[in-house]
Every structure is written in structure tokens, then in C-alpha cells.
Length: 394
Image (cartoon, rainbow, N blue to C red):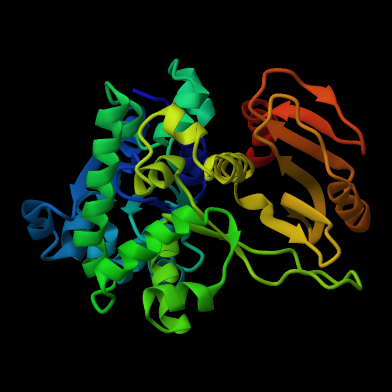
């Protein structure tokens, strides 16, 4: 089993909130994480899976049944299948609050993000915390003895990462992609054509890390630009794609306004492009953008929700692959280089100077940490992620 760094954060949120929603794509390990937490929880726990008919029947009279579980941590999996449950939970939580019981009542697991968060926030405002769980990071993989190169190639979904061979791992990811198109797309967006969503997903893999050009994608797919936006919205909502926004403060310069688009799990990028081995990946044009996507997901997960991620690009060539904003001000700039001896372009220095950023890093797949020009420092990806993790401490 691969340990989850998010379990400590999840435990802290449950101690501080009556209910927590744990979000992430299917097969990412939400249930495993919840069960691991339950084994060491201070009270009795109850697990309900809304995909099981027997568990759903228990909630025919959900208010009465859940009130009977007083004193337990109730874990409800696949909560997006019973959105009406939020109103019932609100009444139970309010009654328990009135009795002086404030924390650790419900842990809700869900696969879709935006709509589920909207429902949760609207119904349980002030009563709920939300935590997103991602595929295993290279740090989590390393703690289980798995090499960073393997994690990059196969991605962070446990079944893919722990497969006995690269071929078996790729087969699992192919099945995962097919199941999303055949099951999840019709469930979450019944009006969207799953085949077209699948074609778009593959196109995004070829254009990993590129600026979003809806008109070009629409022309290739034979659909309208608004339709492309709806398809990407769905993939973002399912936690499969990230739209990285451009930083757009007032600098007196012309800045890029389009977001960059990344498939969030590197293993899915490679599966969509039919790249089975490290050799296949090394010889493909996506190798650089794929590593950039891996780095961005790793560092965004390490920083957590307290800092907002952006990229920066101006019309005169100043560019930062990833920057984090704190208190409305950019304060940390990161360039991603897939090279054993990375070097910096002057555009990175210009961008950092324009934004007055002092913390400047270049992440790369090496082992040493050393200074570079322009006030930057080369640092291995896993080291920078570990360095940034204390920023998320409760």
C-alpha cells in the first residue's frame, strides 16, 4: 500500500468541521484513504456506499437512519449519487451543534467536483470543508520504494502504479479511460457525446500544456467553440484536466489571457498517446510537456489550497511556468526543465523582476540542489514539493 500524505490533512479537517467532502476521480484512492483514517478514528465509524443497493435502501428514511448513528463518524461514498442528502445532513448537523457537538460527524466521498461543491456549499454553508485528493505523487511513490521515473510514466493511480509490468499498467489505464467515457460521461453529462469527449481528451494529450485555443479544437472536432468549452468543463469537473489560469494583474504590459490546459495525471497522457515504456516516452514530442504537467500537479498538491497557482506570459517573451500567489501578490516562481543540467532563459528573470518575486526555483529530474543565475536555484522536484508542504500545515 502507498501511504497518503493527505490523510493527515483530512484528519485535521474532520477535527475542525462537522462534515468533510473528499473529492477526486474514481480509482484515485478516496475509499482506501477514508478506510485508513477510520481504522484509527477515535470513535466508531460506519461506511455506506451509494453504489450498493443495500446501502441505498438503508437511507430510504435517511434522516431517521443517520440520527441513529449518533456518536459515529459516518462515511458516505459516491455522495454525488444522492445530492438530496445534503439537506438532511444540514438538519442533523444543526441539531448536534445545538447540543454542543460540533465536529467529525460525516465524511462524504465524491468523484465530480464543481457541481458537487456547489451543492455542498449552498446547502451546508458554514458546516463543511472540502479536500481534493489527487493520484499518488512522486513523493508518496518514493516512500513505497517506487522510482520517480516509474511514477511519471505510469501516473499516480494505484492500480496503474503498482502493476507488475508497463504493459499491464497501460492496459489498466486504457480500461480506465474507456470506463470514464462509457459510464461517467453519460452519468454526469448525459447530453454530451462521449465519443467526441474522448476525441477531445486525446487531442488535449497531444497538446499537453498548450494555451487553450477553443476555435482550433472546435474546427478539428466539427463542433462549436462553446461545445468545446462544455466538454473541457466536464473533464475539469471530473478532476481529469486542469485549466491553469494566466496571472493577469496590472503591469502595464500586454499579457496572455488564455489558460493553459493539462491532463492532470501523466499516466493518462501517455495512455491516450499509446506510450507504453520509458523509451517510447523519451522519443515522443510530449516528453517535455508531460514532465511539466507532472511538476505542476506535484507542486500544486504540495502547496494545497492556501496559495493560488497561475502561469505568466507577456507579449514580449517574459514567462514563468508556474507561480503562486499569496495575499493577492505573486511570491514564488517556478520554471520546469526536463534536463540534467538546466539553464534559464532571460525571460524568466524579466518576469520575476516585473512581478518582484524573490523566491525563484528551477525544478528538474536530477538529484542536486544548487544556485543558478538570475537569483534562481535548481532543485529536484520531490525536494521542492517537500519544502513547500509545510505551507499547508493546519
